[in-house]
Length: 337
Image 1 (cartoon, helix red, strand yellow):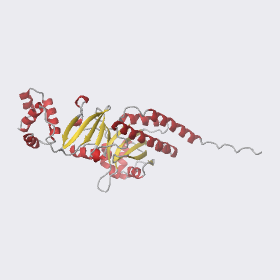
Image 2 (image 1 turned 45 degrees about the vertical axis):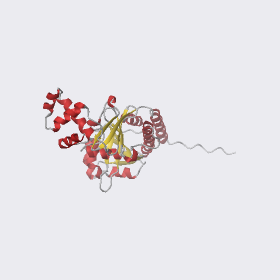
Image 3 (image 1 turned 90 degrees about the vertical axis):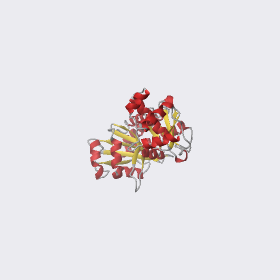
């Protein structure tokens, strides 16, 4: 009777990589019930670091762009990168060959090495932020019209990402996106769909105003109302404390609804309202009327017994409520109220 064939010898690096990935995924799923925030993603990536070491990370939502529009990052978080990183990238994103390759291979881990590997136009950006080795996974974010991406970076003195690390990272990102999307569905109590009705636009933000989620319709609409808006933080004029919720603002002639959603602020665009809209509070109306007449903040404050800062706040809210952009529009709108 012949002896059984010897058991195959396991590849030690592969076993170590698999064990490391298993620990990361267990930690990721164990944290799935924690409050949804950008910090949650940061903690998830820190749990990945022992299995796939990295020096810097960047994640968030982006549009893929087309022949007319460049790709844009709308909402993001990062580890070890400058606060200006996303804004700098948006200015040159259309020339980023590595990013386009990742967007064209959804669900796959793409790797590159060299400061010029993403294209010569990106070399200075890569050197400035020490992005010598890069690895990224881009995935669809259902119902948002945007992509979900995670990028890891190592500096020039570090080894390139290898095939085992790429496989582990790819699997990890699929789980990360799945948990993120499921949490969004749970928050909105709308299984199978995330976003505003009829593509009107939807967003979630922390109490500080930091954006946690948005869809493409919301991003496009808000960028049209606030020139230069980058997407990471809500414009200050839209941040409301919990005691003022729910609320409806008029912005550019459209209704913007704000409501509490767990610990987050939910924002959604409505249609273009046909009625006169929410009435101004008496103090807001008095401030708006005097400003429309040409009086200064200081003069209005003295006349009504307010501080100039309060006058500025009342005017800001009046502009949003009435959906106007300048003093002429404000005066015309007040005559219709």
